[in-house]
Length: 300
Image (tube, rainbow, N blue to C red):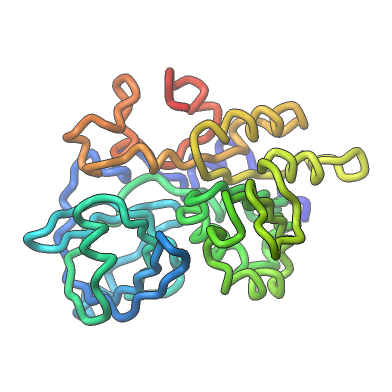
């Protein structure tokens, strides 16, 4: 694996532009049906959607890190990161935490409900431009949701990448999402490391914060290769600790990508809740390289 990805290569690959991010939201609404609902934890469920209509299924494609708008008529609409593999046409997976009116309604539904989806919107993780490189996936809590699509895209094309390390921290063992996927990720030659804040009685793994996993990985015996990329998703407070440590280890800021999707609310640039100066996460993001984030005052 000797391919070196440059910043120019990233900018001309699949890292979305502001236009792709939705400066003009002209995508029509598409009818979709919830085909299954799985409880992942006490607060999160995985919804599998099938786009209705052959033409819609053929047209709809997305890139890892992008989001869609989901609407339940009479209840409301909201943006959600797409958690599924981009290679599966016509079917989508959304991991949704019960929080507001729309998500509380969805928490009570089962298969068969028809909803509206629009998109995809937003910038994306440039996984194709990362081919030939070692990849670090680092997630905290619900941050695994936008990261999962990128991880699946890499593992489905495993021979195009170097080492793949996945670091994941959560509050408790019971709150670790996508536990049913972990074995298949290992079988795809990804190295998985987990850590929790509160272990409970049956946890035998590390206890602490996710930066401890990174410290254990970045040992003198295993320095970062020059051609390494990091995808980091989680609470904004985590970004600084993780990315500053990676910077100290020699990783360029434009080789780190973060998702600020947690800041989004309306997904349309109207409510201004995700605004960072003149930048709107839902319109200009949600994926940014770390250099860009450091130049956005109060982004994290």
